[in-house]
Length: 372
Image (cartoon, rainbow, N blue to C red):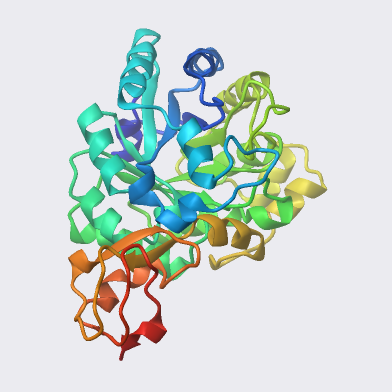
């Protein structure tokens, strides 16, 4: 089964499973291959990694900051990320291995350079993660590609989601999907807001809706499918006790296998199951009832703020700029910055604004620096 067939409506009521390996491979190529094989055995259609060009994704200050954590692979955040980043040659090797065992291989594009990298790699689709869902410079570029997109919506408001859909429509992009997502690791049942899948399906009837979950266990992901999710992405690990911040909310191979097998038994149609039927089919329980609470609007949740503060994108100076300079698109870059600047979605609003101070390369641009 191909993701494009689901996005284009050629396959009725099938579910496409993505095993999000991310950086749970511990920087080890052989472990990554073992994870690919186990995901295939579990019945997943795709394995997904995370591709970053570190200098394009982070400012120098963000990379150079001290990183003291039980999950750290280096003294600075840059050293930590570099340790976990596979090279082009390693990506090619992992892609070849995935082809050999007949499982789709792709990655999230965490910056524009990585988007170009994945295009050159000829992946079947490209993921745009929640951290870039408001990065409309990246989204406009991605929308012009002749490659399907899967876009997560964690840490975003409904207004931003509607802007994503409008950006795709403006580019004539039809082969894309939106993923309901909450960027908390793990996500508690009271924050899962699964009913937003139903809301998304009602608001965007021509868009395939999926679910990228970070909760513990598989029950709530099953509920997401019954509510209409047709792409399922879960973080995946060989052992939750391994080092890494994503391990705890990841599924081990047996859980992944059980999820796939359970979903295969569902009788799905184009309409979401009523909430009462979801409760009955999955034998209820307080966690499920809590995750199915009524919700009508998507907003940034308090539980998402730690991730947004750590990995949300800001507008920074692409080069040194002088006081009095009128901002042009090429003057600005969108990166993870500490301290942060204007949020990524304001990029196009700053064009034509005048700087009232000098700004150094990679420094965040804030509203107080601009003549309005």
